[in-house]
Image (tube, rainbow, N blue to C red):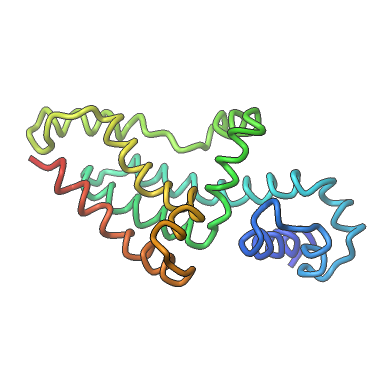
Length: 197
């Protein structure tokens, strides 16, 4: 394992436990088994390290999402595959949604930059497919972009607002994780039952 891989693995562990604001570079260095000077040599600041970890994770997710969006599967199958894949990914990387929300407010240039990436998820083909399935009588009359917003909102929100969700529902971390596991199928079922003709 390279030093960079050790740092990424250590950073993921610490960021998952402490979040961005609670994580300390010394703790990440200790977790990686390197000294803090080496960590700062590789990544000048915690912000740069977090962005590198984020980009590394995003570059794993984006191809999976695009493969689903552009496949020959039906819209119903794509909704099932997306909700399952996305939630499975975020359960393993729960620090990512809160970080994106934070960066949209504090560092919008970073979010704009990564969304300009040519490998970013692109739902254009899926939107066209939804329109076709509406015309074919498979789906109810609806706005395809509203449908995608519903899917994204239902999958992203619980992770982006974890503290709010846990306190509002008065649930522990294990209970939250169990609910998220269940949502891998329940979200798709709810949406499909709503939009099928």
